[in-house]
Length: 300
Image 1 (tube, rainbow, N blue to C red):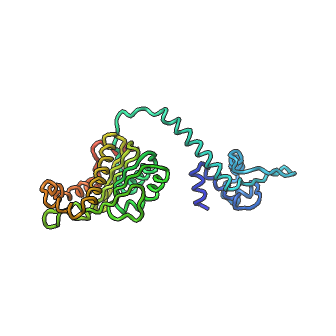
Image 2: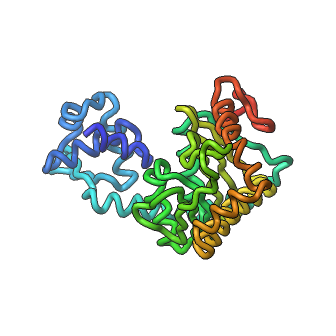
Image 3: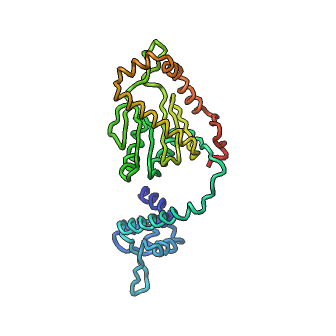
């Protein structure tokens, strides 16, 4: 019962209203105010006011007897949920028109600091869920398990989705490319490990917003921004990585390994890859704040 009450509160009912409605639904027969108060825990001093609010919202009905006593019946749950859904959809449609009309152009594009894995992944979900035109995602299996349901929904609503997935994907979604070619020279020759101890997560939506984050050594850190320059760089990062994987698949992984092993310029980019993990670990350390991000007391 507690979960149902909490969900009804999230949809706009007060705590007392939710308790009274759930009590009426569970009774299977009309109840008067005294009975509702007794069964629900709503104080007798406020139960009639609460029931009146339910009636005003159309979530309950009054039944008046010959002795002027008043009983209450709930609107059936299916009908209530349908009504709530219609009202919610109507509000969203109105706000889609009204809110953009009052938005002031930003004086500066801030970079919002995301301090931990939970906050980072929640914001990534927001970007995926808000996309309507296109999505670019660079992701590892650990994060893909969490974001995959939302990415699937984006594909289903027609979002052009491009995913660079590091390793074998359990279930491909959208235009998914598996990053199977390890651009690394053999270990012992200055090469990097094929499975680094850090993971990057990049998610961009509609080329309007971008999230860039990382996980390393049990820490997590990320930034979110609508700065067009950062968004463009994040999109191109994913696009270039996908392009390289397509080339590796076409040319052949063995041939690509030979190119990487023989080219001194390419090798130079591999030998300092551990510095990326160190930067991510430092970014996740307490007290670190990326340049341009708001101070903790300024963060909304």
